[in-house]
Length: 417
Image 1 (cartoon, rainbow, N blue to C red):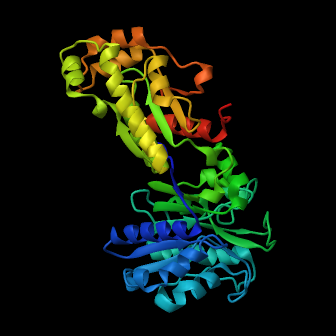
Image 2 (image 1 turned 180 degrees about the vertical axis):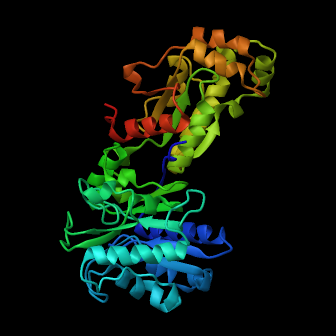
């Protein structure tokens, strides 16, 4: 099984991002009744989160004696230096809240970054109780990361050998790719991946260019850093690239029965943090009874159903609430009712041949549409044309790959003319 794809969660601003990150951190802590390990990050992105953790409403909910605090990378400068990552975290919340023995800083008062890397690797191994990582027993409960302007994470820079290191826990980096140009010490990608949750914070207009490259799937350290379990990107409105910032308010996932509309729609909703609704739930009882009896619906049957979905889309658009709805939407006339002419409603067309989808339908249980109606659906289907600006994806792929393809097309596709 491959590494799970990340969930993208859009928030209003940096304050909302800090609160969402703090809440997720508390959820992760609450899931472990034993010793807890959190891996922090440096830079400017997490400072608001750290200060929030020091406030009474969060501070009182953290079992400080059980939580150990590590850091994903460090600048090779003495503790107390303004560039020192763990010093920033200590000043923001650790010194006031955490037991001193639970703060695990990378030692930087050694003779070289490599010496520091080796010392920190020994500390991590001692904490873990082994010198080899077991995927079934993650080192960290949560790893916090940001994304650098070049796509680096921790101090793993694009094109640097350290990105490809698989046989070490920590490496020294002699020269940084971006400012400040000081040597670094960094955990490697396999060690960062050894976590229950990997959480990225991405905020500010200065992150727009690199986030566009990340969402487009470019081979960058930020796209290689993934938890073996769950990865979440918290992205504030100002960081979304111009095209991604114009993501539609509504997505209609369309296709014939058994093409996977609900499965893909739900997965897409989880990744975007959007509400998902199955269009079947908008059918009036008479339509459900008719289909259960094996009778195809007429257009007269469909109009009130389509209008009910269109009304829900309009309601959500008016309130600024993004929504994903699965709906067969087989004919262009049906889609005109659903989409109309707004620029912020997009079609996601799940494309597949009769043989593949027929096989899926044969294994489907508990749905009110019998397999015999599939032929009538294909006969009715009018695939969306270029003038409808659909996002077209093949259903002959794993669900997460389909969602990746959809997000990639939405992120880098052209706006509707």
